[in-house]
Image (cartoon, rainbow, N blue to C red; front, side, top):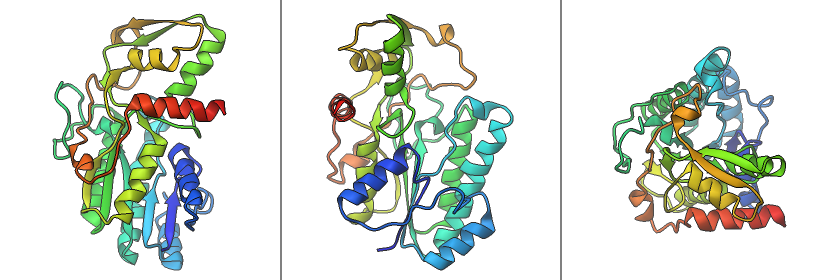
Length: 281
């Protein structure tokens, strides 16, 4: 099977490469200079030459706050909307299955109930808007696709909340973390495993939600990350920690559709413990 990974050097793309390497599965993982997804002609030519059968579209602009104003706003549009549309059109042209990673930020995050896969998106920041427009482009242009929404991503190969907390604990004895934003952490390994599971088991095409089981707020997540560190963590409200981009207050993704596939989802506590064991090793 001819497999193509976009964004292969990012946090998720790197995790996916390691997973496929462990399975001795061949793939192509071009750098952004080799495959500029914002250049439609380049994308079309690359896909026509390689003829991928599966495309794992991990490339994304994820600077949520920077996306609220120039120049990040324009980059967010080019990569997450225009780039995704270019990849979608090229994937359809060669008959490939496209796996696209989206986000809980497509929802307003103002309800306490879990968001199902068919809940109406209503993004409240620029990053969420762009990712939702990426979803719409894929649904419009591609026949065979998996849209996988995830949240609160952490992993070994990039910047994320877990590394931020661990690094701050080295230089601070007191930290404050918001306690009024609730969601589900997602380990990149779990996410990568479900991406390949969907393709390998030929799941029904459509939208899926994938994060680790159980929920928490950021303060509770930080406490779990730092439970063996000599640091005091105190809760604060979002109003006390203002950010440029709106953060959903409740963005719990309903996992029932994914669970029904037979894919086993670890709890975020189990995922975090395994992750920390890996990086300590």
